[in-house]
Length: 302
Image (cartoon, rainbow, N blue to C red; front, side, top):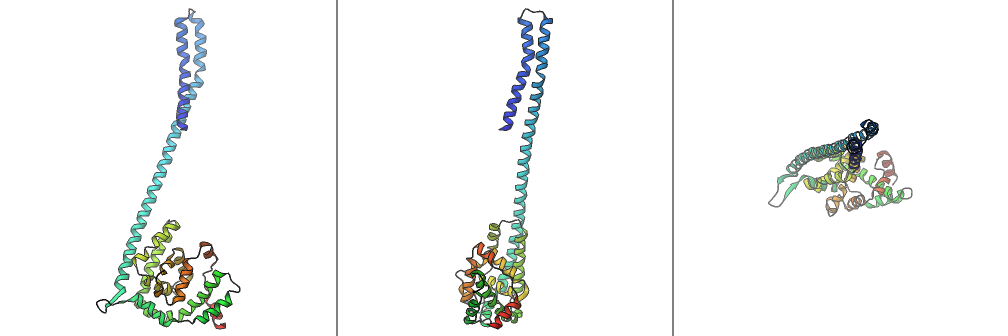
């Protein structure tokens, strides 16, 4: 629009500049005057057109510059979009290759032995079942811990600290089962998932896109496997704070809905539901770092 106005102004300037010579010829041809008298008038008119010619040339050059600048900006924007599309394609190619590898390992490890036409051994279901047997915590101990903590912490932190206490209780059972869990391939499965999380973190994805891609884990591996991985991470293989942040950030706690039976018990189901429903503001109030020494001392006082 602006370039069109410049071109219009240049056109007017050039018309004005062309009037001088034409007017001089008309004076010489149709007016009965000595050419010597007409000459100064023509010189004046010709000289007066110079600024208009200069202005016209400048306006044409400036309009060309603006047009080329706009085209360059459009080219840069198109180039940027193409690069983003290529980056997204490279990410997705790598992402789905990793998911297929994860699924291949998950499926071959999940069914270890055919026990009958409708009965198969599931390594991840078995892991959860074993944890249920070995990690039993009385509800009255949790209730005492909750009542002690709620006096000094906000509601979100109180509930979370109670379950930090609970997860500390799990550690004995989980650590005693490390060899058994490893034999079921959970260690290697965990490393597959960890690499996928790392790829998502390194990619230039929005929060919504990261959640969208992380949700594919629920398609490629079973809920039992994901819950086993979450419990397994508490064994000290990895900082529980990172595990909590990833499961929370990617909304993987939502997978518990309708799957209460795969948790160690109903209290875990309530806890995971609590985490899945937290608002971003509530999540920011939770400190997921775990000081095991302090929690151990708290446990001994209960």
